[in-house]
Length: 405
Image (cartoon, rainbow, N blue to C red; front, side):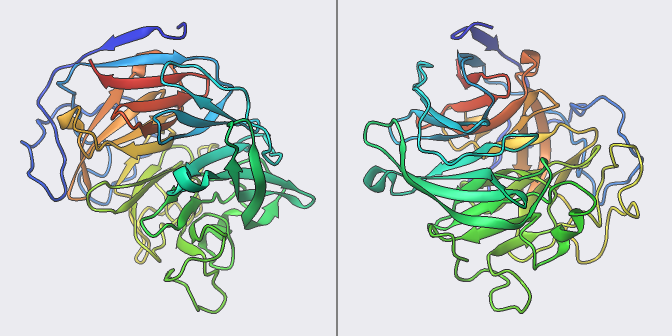
């Protein structure tokens, strides 16, 4: 599809809405689940609605517009105060995109990345005080003599927007490892101005157990200050043998992080192996189970570990997918433009090649819809813009705007 081409999309169904603290709309009308393929396993969910929930359809007529197809393997994006988008590209560049689809030249001054495999320049966020200090924070896979690791850096976007000034690494999720998979890489600011960052467990059976180890930075969500120090009040602060920056653990490869716009709850999604992709509501100090429990299989088809799905003391996912949709970046919709989408969760699907819409009620998934499935794109990240529209990037280089027609 050429840049600027317009895809008109519409569907009909009952109006859906999820609110946490405000007036609720009518409950969803049950329909067949959107997933029709057979699961990889016969594993039983822990509770009804944990997988293959009823399908829903948007009643609002919306459009998906390709603003540009000129990006090179984009990975992360964030909205700027003036409405433009700051986008990372996997090989190690950043670009600014206008809402007309115009792309800036590559921004220079960014430390080199290891772009092999799943590595590269990853998630990005602006300082909450960006309009005053112009600081940018990003996650990347850093090459070191002993291997690679997930690192967080910061720097100032120059006034002419051509370079990052004074870039420096503020945090490293050690140990480094000679592998090219599972770096995590999403980043958010919390209300206190601290950073939440996801790290992967680096995939291999040798490193997986470190997701369960509080002495390791692998397979975690960490909470750090703008200077990369452990944030005050973290759950393992002062505990001997535990890293004070850890916020939650037992993660495989967290690819989506988002705060609910009303409750303030932190949500994440992470890749399962073969099946078993997860959506979790994150609580400080909790253990989310990988690799001890999972609803997925090894890519070989063998069980993961002992093939356990539930164990006391380990958190269950709110929702899981089998077969995989390969969930990536995600955002909650908070605009009033499409009321039935208010507080719904939108997730980019990589192998699924669609945008996932999840309707939530009281921290449970009650409906699922697939958007832009006909585009056959690997949706890498999604955010809500200053104008209330959704913006999504794909591995194939597209930037989409999704909005009410």
